[in-house]
Image 1 (tube, rainbow, N blue to C red):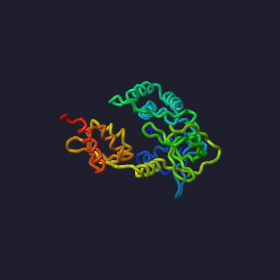
Image 2 (image 1 turned 90 degrees about the vertical axis):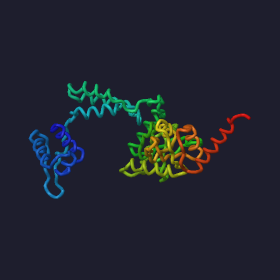
Image 3 (image 1 turned 120 degrees about the vertical axis):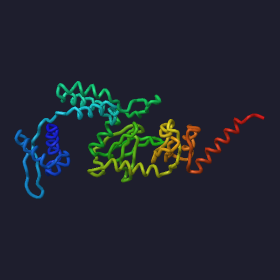
Image 4 (image 1 turned 45 degrees about the horizontal axis):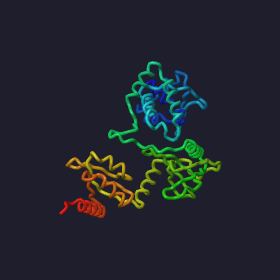
Length: 323
């Protein structure tokens, strides 16, 4: 729809500065000829778009140009309302800000779109508190004051002082250089460095936090997705055990809930699923598979099969028929 495309064109120029017609065409998924026609239409409507000639030329808006472009189409409004309706509203302590933003989104809609978009959003449910088996999702609690201080340090680029309780260790104060925040399965992690070394901290284990005024030692630009993948790979390769497992699909989620990670999955001819699963250690793997009884089978490694067989043999002997 042309009106939506014109709004997108102006937003692209506002946010990214000078762009060529070819770049605009790729971003808007239209032809260069269509972009040129849209530029003419914007100019005729009084939007100060101007062309710069030459090798590094393109189209740009006059410096200082601002306008309120709050007209959202139905699909855009629905996407925002649906995203804001899930349990993510509490992520990073921004629940109240998200609620306020959703009110502004609804208010920005044309009158005839407000009711339609709100009603449609009610038809989508994102991440409910329980699954089909009535298992309640566990959300780790992070004190509001801690979340505010961590978020402040991350966004301001300042050092952060945290009182952290690592596993099996007494709480200690430490000063870190925050890089970013990541939320995974209802848990929030702070990616940081400490004395130049990579560190990952779970916010639920922070007893207190204080954003300092000293600038953090960190790059100006960051790829959190890449950093998270790299840290996950290092974590999984350090002291963990990988197991090849067959499992009845009815019990698959139970296995995934106890595993550290799942690297591969493929269906088998009999309807079961073959998984490559990572556990903390051999004892953890044995315990997780034992819970599933005959609905799962460890194919590898051999020490895991041996420990499960020995455990089953001992149990059978205990409950064998009395002479």
